[in-house]
Structures are given as structure tokens and as C-alpha cells.
Amino acid sequence: MLKKLTFFSVVAMVVGCAEVQKVEVPKDKEQKIAKVGEESSMKLLKTLKGELMNAMQKGGPDEAVEVCSQKAMALTSQIEKETGYSIKRTTFKYRNPANTPDKYEAEALKYFEENMKQGKMPSYYIQALNENGKVVYRYYKPLKVEGVCLTCHGDPNLMDKNLVQKIKAIYPNDKAVGYREGDFRGVVRVTIPADKI
Ligand code: HEC
Image (cartoon, rainbow, N blue to C red; front, side):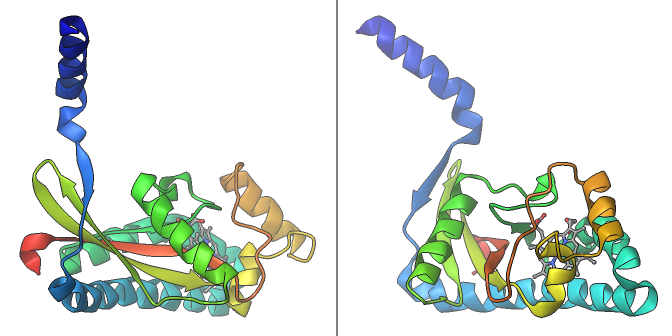
């Protein structure tokens, strides 16, 4: 018994620095979290979409793919600096491995997937996490696939052959194809420290 306790306390000490627990979202804070989360996620989406459409018009999908692969992460960092919140795009079927979901993001993705199955699409999902005694709120905004997205995320058999090759060369383990218009694509996650609300 004593041995067991010692073992567990050592484990607790080792993993202690990354202790995260789900806690309850205070009902009276929900509206404010949603407002801040919506503003920050929209800022990112507008910026990314603007760059994407610009590049598509200037150089077609070939150029746009390079803009996406080289600029999306840098633009995200820029919006993080502007808003002061940590922001990430994440999905189960990702192209960029940097966008792989963590445990709590996966839970949010499942929430939207389950709702989609029932023909519903909530406009957001909120979690509260206690990270080593510090509470943060995570706001998740769902993304849907639009017509223009299919150029690079659609059925590879219907996509431009050169483009398919180009994407494969940059992302050999690409999972972000085979989508159809209206599909759930993933989320934008905004992390807001509780003391900001
Ligand atoms: C010109 C090609 C192109 C188009 C069009 C395009 N994407 Fe992407 N997308 C990419 C590339 C390349 C990446 C990987 C680089 C990155 O953004 O991190 C990506 C990544 C993503 C990600 C991050 C998750 C992941 O899979 O890594 C999301 C979410 C996303 N795209 C959604 C969309 C949506 C929604 C649209 C339509 C509004 C769209 N994309 C249109 C090329 C494209």
C-alpha cells in the first residue's frame, strides 16, 4: 500500500506540471465568452479567407496552395498577437499535422459531429479548463465546407491533377480531402484566460 502511494505521488509530481482538469463553465459568463470568442475567431477567418481569395484570383489554386501552406500559421500568430488570445484551427481530418487536436479539442469536434448527425449545427461550444490552478475558457467555432474549399479539400479524382501532386508533396499524410459542400470541416479554437472575462 505504502509502495503504491509512493509510486503514485512520484507520477503525480512528474506529470504535475501539465495537470489539466475540466471544470464547469459559469452560466453567467457564457455570453461574454461567446462574444470574445466569436470576435477573435472571425478576425482569423476573415484574414485567412481574404488572403486565400486574393491568391486564387492572382495565381489560381497553385499559388493559393502555397499561400495557405506558407502563410496560414504566420497569420494565425499575427491574429493571436492582435487579440491577445491563443488561437488554433483543428480537425480530425487535418492536412497540416500542427493542427492535430488535443484531448479537449477532440471532445469539441465530437460534440459538433454528433449534432451534425442529428441535422443540427450549434454556433459554438465552450469548455472551462483548470490548468495548474489557472482557469481558461475555450471557445470553439465550427467551420463548414463551402464550394470554393473543394478546389483543395474535395474529391482528389475531381481535383486538378497538378494541385493534388503539389499538396501530396508538401503534406504526404494529408487527411483533408474527400469533403463535400456543407460537411463539418473542423473548428477554430480561441483560449481566453478566465481573468479576462
Ligand atoms: C488553394 C487551396 C486551398 C483552398 C481553396 C482551401 N484550403 Fe484549407 N488548407 C489548404 C492547405 C495547404 C492547408 C494546410 C496549411 C494550413 O492552413 O495550416 C489547409 C488547411 C485548412 C485547415 C486547417 C486544418 C488542417 O486540415 O490542417 C482548415 C480548417 C481549412 N483548411 C479549411 C478550409 C476551408 C473552410 C476552405 C474554404 C473556405 C479552405 N480550407 C480552402 C489549402 C486550401
